Length: 172
Image (tube, rainbow, N blue to C red; front, side, top):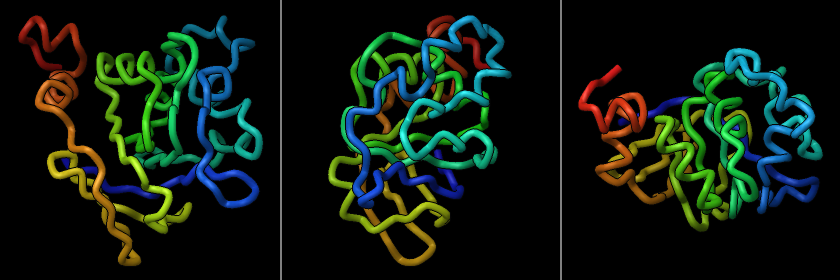
């Protein structure tokens, strides 16, 4: 699978990738009454300092880059679904919280682990091409980095449209 899009590099005020972005920062518990996935996108990253306006600026096809332990915390599925609602094509992080990773893969939301990506020089607004088979992330300005490729099972679940479709042999 290949992904091409504009990137959002989630950095703090000092320009460092933000680590330990938990599910409450991604989709705050005050919005849990919202059950319509189509409406969840408006709340994405609403509780992350410096990124409250992300949902207003994001476009379908965008790619998000974050630091270590993205999605730490609860098993809150809305923290995956809010990005799907916005049309975010791919999340790239140095690492993901275990439950977040499983939720994303099971719901066919593409994620790519890229330990050490903070040194790659990608900047918000750049366009990148990502090859999930090789893990290559190539920026339009020459930056290049290799993350971990999708496992066969991850690629198959994403291609099938989710874990249930994959297990039943029925693709979307």
